[in-house]
Amino acid sequence: MEIKILGTGCPNCITLEKRVRKVVEENAIDAKITIVKDIVDIMAYNIMSTPALVIDEQVKIKGRVPKNEEIINLLKS
Amino acid sequence: MFDWLQNIADFLVFNAFGLVKGSHLAEALNFFIYDTIKILILLFVIIFLMGIVNSYFPIERVKNYLSRKKLYGLEYLMASLFGTVTPFCSCSSVPLFIGFVSGGIPLGVTFAFLVTSPLVNEVAVGLFIGLFGIKTTVIYVVSGVLLGAISGIILQMFKLEKYLSTWVKEILVKAQKDQNEFVQEKQTLKQRIPVITTEALKIIKGILPYLVVGIAVGGLMHGYIPEGFFEQYMSKDNMFAVPISTVLAVPMYSNASGILPVVQVLVAKGIPLGTAIAFMMGVVGLSLPEAMLLKKVMTWKLISIFFGTVTVCIIISGYLFNVIF
Image (cartoon, rainbow over all chains, first blue to last red; front, side):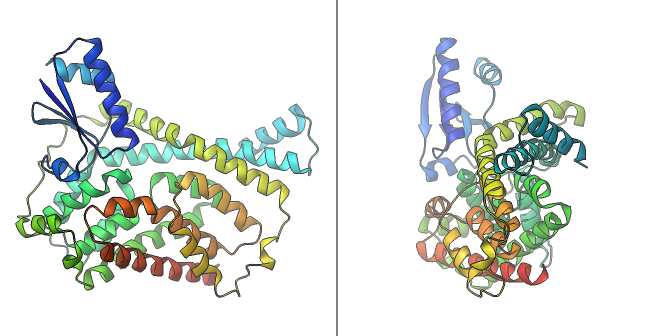
């Protein structure tokens, strides 16, 4: 599983990263986590607000920071 | 509407804490208690209502609407209005800007949105009602929306596309009026309420430190600065007060919650309303951090033209406010 967190570095983006890392670690999920900070790369995903959570190249969440439960559900499905 | 709250504050300060009415500390503390609670209540209500609107009209839908509909000149006003109801984390300015551009939305319309977004938002409106009353709030909102729309129209007239960054220009060329997929979530209002409530509380939690500090500073000023103090230095007749305070304000950034309580006290102590509001608009609406973000999509020349135009519009509103009030 490839997880990408899109964000330019604002507090919300950092929170999302922390939550995702925590969920992955606590649930022993086999995933590679990449943080995408470059705006040109972020735009390739066609989103209008950050942060965004991309799993296996599909944008799952955009413009908000989901709760841990929601992240777990997304990663496990 | 809030008399009951004033009674509670009075009781706490004068009876429970036993402070002397009229003393600096008593007045400051009274102001602090009353204003903090009043504002928190107002903020929650307004943010919650805005949250409902936003749940049905997220940014993708705004973009589709603005790029698809022929609005015959009204699009500037619509963009400005949308700016007020759409929540706007400034780090989203770049994705949003690109999103609008790739949707074929004219630059001026995008600017109208960008100007009004930070200026008129649920936090600012809630604070304004709590600190200045409904009448002033309505005037502020109307002038904020008009300021956005007019700045947008002026900026569109300057034909600034050539000053965009190269990679953005490429997107502009390819702009096929592409529509973001917008699938309205099939949730009833009742189902949306828990999320909207959580979001509202989260926003309030985020601004709480700034708000408390702002009101504390305001409270101290309220209690310790004599009435009419500022009038000696900054009366309405001082022609330079508005431009100077605006220009000073532009590079600064504070969110509305930190600065509005202070502005309210400044006005109460003698600074003309227009001057104070121009200052507040300059601080909240334009800032150095925002300029740094926009640098990724536009050249410095464009940023300066953008900032310059909005600054002039703010200065004009400042003068107008002074004249009307």
